[in-house]
Length: 212
Image 1 (cartoon, rainbow, N blue to C red):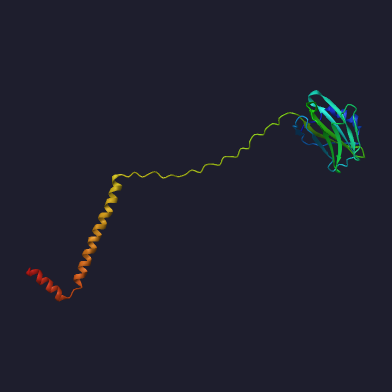
Image 2 (tube, rainbow, N blue to C red; image 1 turned 90 degrees about the horizontal axis):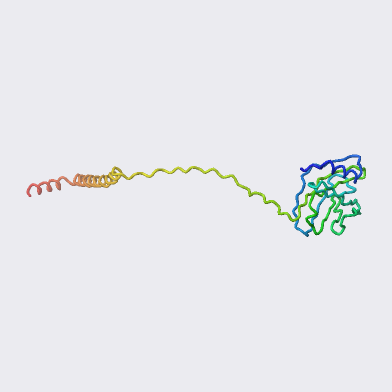
């Protein structure tokens, strides 16, 4: 928040008259970057404050200069300072709780802070910081939003097995085991076959074997 300097407070008091109560509303100043010869609208909200009249001021902080622009009452009647261009600066009442300052054909000379002072029928005042105007100035670009990097999950990669001769030996052993198992099965089947033959057939088979 940009504080109101003491010299500006003194000038505002002289213009508006000393109210029975002064309220300084703490709010951030609005920054506007209008193009040259464009139209700018500056709002002054009453909120819950019972507004009756608004006073508009233009100040240039680096030059310690405050200019009283004029005022506008609740009925929409406006009065301007002598050196204010009424064709460019227009006071309006918008709705029940909002006053508007409209600046047409904005130039570089219009740079500065535009503040408003609200006053009710009981002469209580509410001072608002207002809007800072910088015509023809390129607005600053905000840095891009950087998303936090997600932590990398470590991947467990198993090491490759070395195909040595020992491993190859196990591959060669398996076919040999299969071959031996096949021979054993054939021998068992043959013995079972002969065990099921009748005795005569076995005696005849043995006799033929001995004769030959």
